[in-house]
Length: 357
Image (tube, rainbow, N blue to C red; front, side, top):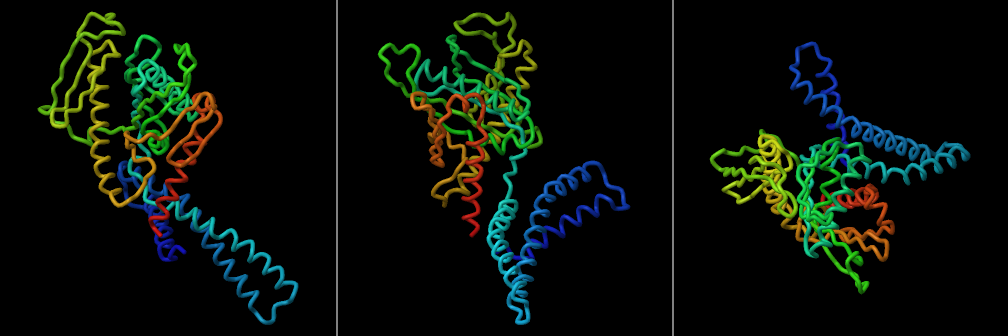
């Protein structure tokens, strides 16, 4: 049971926010936006709390009616029937409120930078990386999110050595963060003449997009090199030094951008990715410290873990973190990821609820 005083505090906070938005005193736009967002975030929580409290009160009233000595027999039977139905519904109402009250990941509402890199498997791994990148582009389209391709390094055979995109929209990081890790593919490559199944891999990294105010980078910590951009096989993309390579000296992180003909735009994109990687490194460090006592965790973004296998001969996609298998590989690669992601979110919520009990 959730303590009633805890539920009441949430309702009271919601009421305070409502009063502050319609109060007589002036409120600056920044404060109003902050209050309005908190009010909006709390509204579905309060609605669920009120539904739970109402159901609990009804259960108490029905219990009293059943226990009352002078209750008519027919009325008593009706009350008992209603009480059984209500008691069966209460645990789900309480669980729903608990989920809504779980601490939120501070990055869940952020936009994201998604990176895909070919792993072991040569050309086949690069082809798989390109398919994954396309899968996420289609998933974003289905979710009505906006995407911006930041960089693509092609192999010349239709594969990607690495590629990155920015994704913006509502709840982007909250859903995409579960995609971080090693994705494995099992199939017969088009170039395989003996029909043998090969296993290849690609790595996906999902980083919360951050602003200048989130993480400060000193200019003295950066080495910026410019050079002439080139395409697959050494073909010149343009004749100016528009490509940019930024090295963050303290961490050793290197980011390169050459997709745009403008050196200024390439530098801006590179700094955007660098900020995200630095922020992610710090976030992963904090997460590792928090998770030190946990035996397992969904969605840590540990890139050494194999999280999912795409088996083409069996038409299956298996997520190893939750032992979920879907037999519709083409539909998944077409961007239909919600079933998998919803299951991962539910498992994550269940894990965190168990830690609170």
